[in-house]
Length: 602
Ligand SMILES: O[C@H]1[C@H](O)[C@@H](O)[C@H](O)[C@@H](O)[C@H]1O
View 1: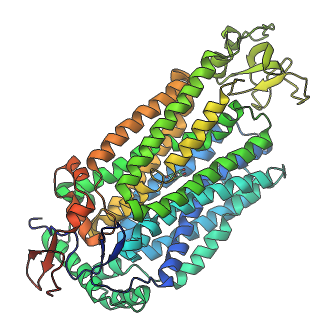
View 2: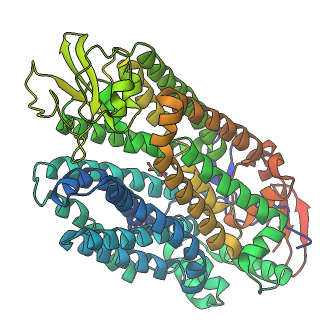
View 3: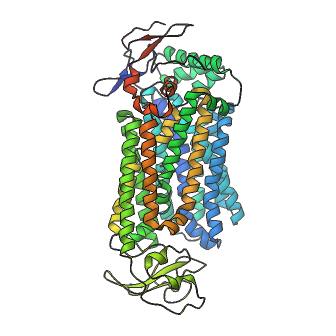
C-alpha cells in the first residue's frame, strides 16, 4: 500500500471539527440534529452488550443454588463458569470471517438466536451435562455479539456521536451485569428452581433483539464493500434523516475503492493486516488495550467482590449478594460517566485518567490487604485433627485463608477475636467446616463464626474504599474504551477481523486472569496479587501513553492515517494536531493538501 491518504478529514467531509471551546461542530455547517433512528439502531444492537453482561454476571448467583441442587464439585463449578468465557473467545475469533461474509446484521441476528436457544436450554436443564451445553451455547452468542455490535454501531453512527453510541454498548454490558446481580438477589430466595429463572430470563432481551433486527438495516459500509451500492445509499439516507449523504457516501466509496486498488481484494485478511504497517500497528494497539483491560483485574474484582465484602465485615450470604449488586451498580453508574465524557475529553485522555485512578486504587486495595495480613488474628486454639490435615500447620488466619482446603473458626467479642482455629472446610460446602465447632453453622449471635476465604480485620474499610475507587476509575475509561477504540481504528476491509482478534484477546485474558486469581493469591498472598495488578496497570499506562492516538470526531475512513508513523509514536499525535491537516480529494486523482477553510473542490 503505497500512497496512503494523509488526511484527518477530507474537505467536504461533513465530519465535525473542534471549536476553540472544545465542542465539535460541522465543517460546512450541516444541521447536527441526529435522527432518532440512529438511537433506535444503537439501542437494539446494544442489547447484545446487555446479554453479554447478563450471561457473564448471572452465573455467580445461580451457582450458589446449583451447587447444592446438582451437587456440583469444584471442577464442575469452574467448568460451568469458564466454558462460557472459553466459547466466547473461540466464537469471537471466528466471528471475523462470519462478519465479513454474512454482514453485521445477520451476525447480530445469529447471536440473538443463539442467546435465545441457550437461555431455553439452561432454564429446562435436568442435569449438569445439559447445563454445560447451555453455557457453551450462550458463550458462542456472547463472542459473536461482543465483536459485531461495536462495529455495527460505529458504522452507522455520525462521527460526532460515534464514541458516545459505541460506549452505550459498554454501558449495556455493565447494565446487564447489574440486572443479573439484582435477579440473582431476588431469586436467591427461591432455593429450588431460582437458578432456572436466573439463567432463563436472558431469553427475553434475546427475543426482543432478534425481532428488532428483523426490521433493522445492514451497515451501509458493509453493503458498499459488497458492491450493493443502491441498498447502501438507501440505508444511509434512512439513518441520516434529511441530511445530505452525498459526501459521506462518496468518502466511504472512495475509501473502499482505494483500499481494493492498493491491497488487491484477495488474500487472507489477517495476513494482509499483519503485512501492512498501519493496520498491523492498529491491531497491536487494539489487542493491547483489550489485554490491559483484563490484566487490570476487573473480573477478579467483579467475581470476588463478595469475598472482598466479607473481608470488610459482611458475614451474611444474602447480604453479600446484595452488596455485590451494589458493586455492579457502581460499575454501571460510572460507565455512564464514560458515555458522557468520551466525546468531550476524547478516548486518549479518558483512558489515561482511568488507568491512573485504577492503578492508585489497586495500590490502596493492596495496602488494605497488607495491613489486614500484618494484623491478622493468630490461631490460638488447636483442636485434635482426626485427619491430620495441613490446616493445623498455620499460625494465623491470613495463612489459613490462603489454603483453599482450610477455613478460620473463631469467636468474636466486639472487635476481639478469641478461641480461633484453622480447620478443614467441608467437601460438600464451603459454608461450614468439615468437623468441630463450625460444622453446624447455626448463625447464633454468640456462636462460633466460620470464615472461608476471608479474615476478620479492622482495616477492611481501606479495602472497601479501594474497591469503590477502583470501580469509579475503571468504569468510565478502561471498561468501555477498548471496545470503542477497536470499533474505530481499522479500515473497513480489516474491521471485522481486527475486532475479532482483539475481542478474542479480551476473552482469553479474561479466562486467564479469573482462573488464576486464587492461585496467584495463594503464591503471592492477596496483597501481592493486587500489587502485581498495579504493576500491570503501570505497564498499561505506558502503553496507552505511547501508542494510543486520539480518534475523537474523525471519520472512520480517516482514522487509519493515525497509524502511519512508527508504533508508539501515535500517542504524540493528537486529533487536534492532525485534524487541521486536510487533504482535498479531486475526482480520480490523489489528495492535495489544503487548509481547513478551503472549499469543497469535488
Ligand atoms: O468492558 C467490560 C466491562 O468492564 C465488564 O464489567 C467486564 O466484566 C468485562 O470483562 C469488560 O470487557
